[in-house]
Image (cartoon, rainbow, N blue to C red; front, side, top):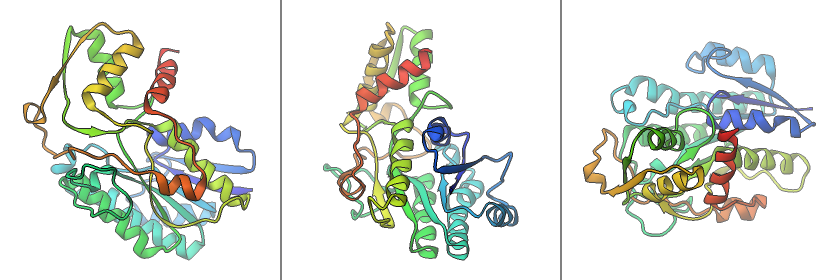
Length: 290
């Protein structure tokens, strides 16, 4: 039985992995969040890993409050930078593979073509810097670790742009949304499926485990404005969505103006099939309405 330890299990991605775990009968899952395991407690982390003896650790845990991270640098740095390094050391000591989730915020958004894994990184926010440093710390410690960068993650659970737009759309006659930040919304359920497909194909010897950095987001490109319009259209919400420039909606943390990710590597190496973002959005909204 393949043992998979999932950290941050109550977050968007961890919850989606949990939702499909019963489809994988050869895997034994250990789902943990802060109540079961405080990752910032290195002694507790060591002891937990020693007890479980996982074959894979999927690290979905992160400090994701992007704007708050600009001030709460100590905790954000601990969770996003130091913890991945600790996990990397444990992976070597206990011989398990790691899949660690990172972000499009490692880029500055000045590109006009989808970012590849080899493109220059230049985060403009503390959150982005802490996540980039976490990638570096993990890959320095463990040569068999995998980093998957994703973008604009949403799901039927937790706090996210999708849930906010539904709430505001039902409460207000008009919402203002930036239209000059371009990227791709990513349904956490699709990423969860991709992660377990990678593990499954590795175990079945369909694919060879190739560590390093990968990109995963839904197919297609849009602005936050386009995303909001689609949410209201699919949910059947009658609300005027007004486009505004980023300068009219200042935030403590800088966002990349363009953060579309090139997914050709993960598709080529692991045969991952990626849905179009609007198709996945429809699927998620059906879940919410239930």
